[in-house]
Image 1 (cartoon, rainbow, N blue to C red):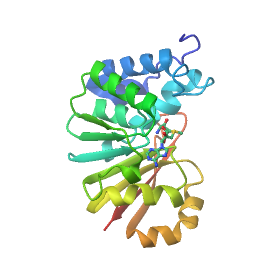
Image 2: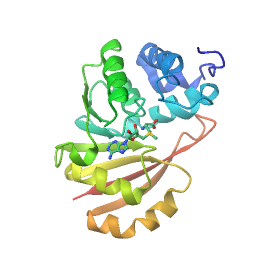
Image 3: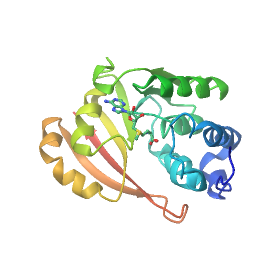
Length: 209
Ligand SMILES: C[S@@+](CC[C@H](N)C(=O)[O-])C[C@H]1O[C@@H](n2cnc3c(N)ncnc32)[C@H](O)[C@@H]1O
């Protein structure tokens, strides 16, 4: 059922560029199967493009060619969206739940994303330590618990690119000790999407030694 799906916003063409057809195919699949598979809540269809798909797409320009891990990919947000837009980046999607892993693998195959590997594991058990150039995450947990899951996966001088809500500044304060413990520095909070989407998104970006 896709009744009530948000019409495609004009920003979709801007953010997906040449990859708009794949972005549409992924969004349509998520609209069709997301609720029955427990990937999105029942109220999300009227804001699926803006709040989920395009919100994830805003992060694409922050990625560099190299190896990016997405911790807790779930429905593929932001991991699959970013893999569609950035074929020059190699993505490892880290997700412990079997049903979500099956979804991620099926979507990667259907969208012919040869730049995606799916790892079924919790981040802390994933054996990816010290290996990634950048790590993304969205809606996994507050920074205080997210930093210990994500920072150890980065190679020295790797970068965290964590999607966050309006409470990010408070989360940074609450994570002070953990940030120090994990050698997280050059912290910035970026506000993305102004003038592009009706809702902005925030990104915690920092380097880890
Ligand atoms: C609320 S969902 C968000 C999913 C997706 N990132 C999104 O924005 O829609 C949180 C996801 O994190 C995963 N997760 C929870 N703890 C994790 C861990 N320790 N390592 C990796 N993934 C984890 C869950 O299985 C779930 O799929």
